[in-house]
Image (cartoon, rainbow, N blue to C red; front, side):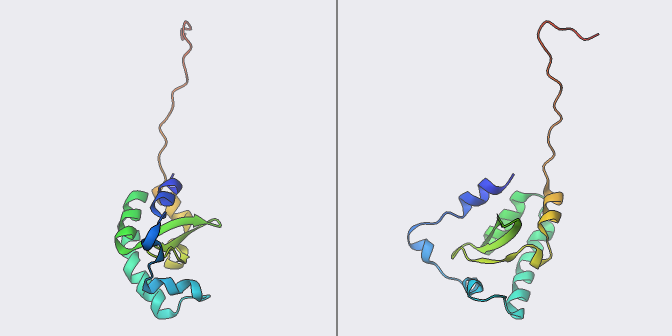
Length: 121
């Protein structure tokens, strides 16, 4: 549904692979400090709240310098520049299960295949 798109968005090579941001330090700590967590929630919550599709959510996060990726059964937020895993979406108040229910794709209803030469009675 969204994994392939996330994988394509996260491939970085050359000089851009070495970029650092304020969020890069998240990998050096077991937990983000309170101030960093509050800043992240303030920054990203509007994008989670107003998105109506996975694509809208990805676009909003990308503009802010982040992306999502499923790892170990949870959706995680990563820093786009350093590719550091920052936290889960659940940590921000948006559990994976809720996001999947909210953005699920509606599959088309398939009609039963009709065999040639067979008529319905």
